[in-house]
Length: 352
Image (cartoon, rainbow, N blue to C red):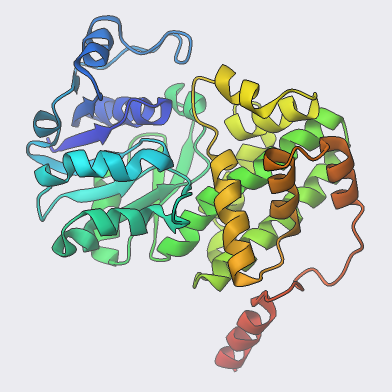
């Protein structure tokens, strides 16, 4: 059976490793230190984060990047987005020209505002770049570990590569759809975390489902506006990596970003909230990157702007969210430098 290397012992990395090992693939999970590798081999996953979870026989843990990637058909990057570049510097010498490179992190690099596929492309040999794939969708890890049905999207510029990775990684109760819009799939996975923080605030403030539904819908339009400005097809944002992931992340108490929003609505300090969490809430750093992108593009993104001021300027959560929900309405697709009208006009003309 083919071998898969999973880089990162995050909950998502461990979940993917277990799912693929249960499928019968040989999976090598790479830990950053030998101490962590020994602990995982002897005790299994952290019982606080992943209770009642054990490693299948097909799954091995190693701290050696050479051993982890040796003869691997695919490598899955499941580390926080802010550490993707430094992890690639460690493992890239062990990549082969045929190795599929699958990114599972959902975020933007805050130092550059770059998408993960762009970061990966900068760190690997040019001849390997066609193998870059993006995995993104409504994938709450606890449900997947329970064997509940889940679907996701795998995007690659080369459709042959996308289908190859799809066949390799599809598992029982884990359906994978393909897409060639890498920008849209990546931005959907990153931007929904920003909106999820706000949805958590709305839940924490007790503003009800009507308010949250309106907030999520406006958030999706804002996500599409930025994605289109970067070159995406807005229809991608209506798929699993956009709307699907947005629904799951905004609605579920299992979402880390939703949790951050709820805790902020209670008046808790952001630094203390993040320190209390075992996993990274990607939406916090992503908000800073997206806000900066919007400023540079002169793009109107009111939700992102308000989230930024709450997270980084200590704006009052209740006052800010209340003002945002009571904002004066306009046409749903209008906004400064949004290209949604022109996109759909072009589509209509093409159809005629």
